[in-house]
Length: 192
Image 1 (cartoon, helix red, strand yellow):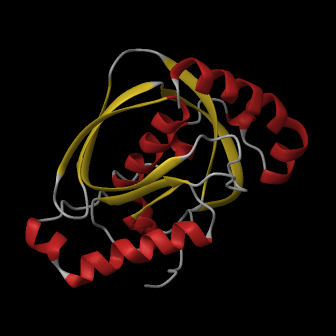
Image 2 (cartoon, one colour):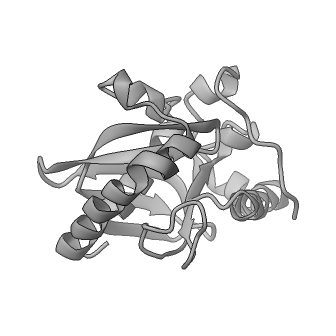
């Protein structure tokens, strides 16, 4: 297991649609090692998730995990380690919320993105077992963000108002408290 370099905005790998993973590939030591490396890389960067193309691999694999007291996202509710292989996501309804997002591949920049509040996520885990889950609130936003990566989409592409772009420093200084209140209300209302 190793911490890998994270691709940053402008690198073509981030704009590629990742390829489906075959059952044989998923069982291979190389793909299992990639998954371990993605987990290590996400944790080392204090991320909420990471997609394979963020570590220069164009496979449809993403990892989501929010550990309690994550210093980068202290307002996000905990999410247990979830490895998603060949995931598909769909909104359950039309409800959306504005979420101030950042990204490991877009260092020191945040922006407001509208995300679905309730989504269904279908995926295989690292062992090839099928899952069909509903995710809500900030957690739903995290899953949408990571699955966007697998289609070559960055949060930058989803920002409707460029005036919401800000550095992490300015987010912390001027916007975090207000967003944390809105985030807490969303979590309280939908449970995650």
